[in-house]
Length: 214
Image 1 (cartoon, rainbow, N blue to C red):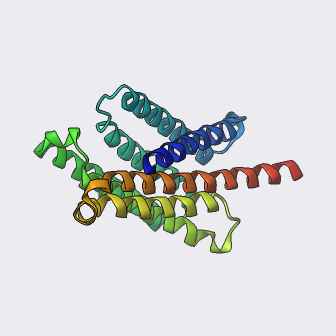
Image 2: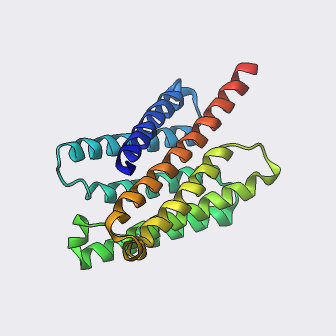
């Protein structure tokens, strides 16, 4: 039963992501740099997820795609928040942390290249935590400003917090419910992703209403 529900939620997530890509991509040339970067992010995530789904349907190993997902998500969202942040110290943090993160990952894969064919917990942690910090910076900056990408950032924080916790605690979950650990972890991660996409959609619809009033 949980597998069927998971597949339904996964399809909902794909549909929401596709809708968000269309909404963001409309008149993209006239939009700000940050919106263009976020559009590229969503488009790339859609491509990776669709490729992963095709490989899964064909019963082929798609685990290696997780590395592209996490690394590209980290790189693009780091640049995205770099363009949104206007405090020099925060922008400097993004630069330094991004370089350190890439260095850590390079050493990690050079030392253990076999990790490319498995789930890399270190990769998940070091690519998710910095984005959480950047998102927190952005929310703090919005306290006295117009709420630009507010719901998107809240949704991203919910997704990254939950998803990272699930992956990092996977082995403990395996001990508790060994037979269905993977299924429940997958479902919860998909559920959080759907919530994230709904937050993005709320932001996009809010922006569209604001543009229509003007």
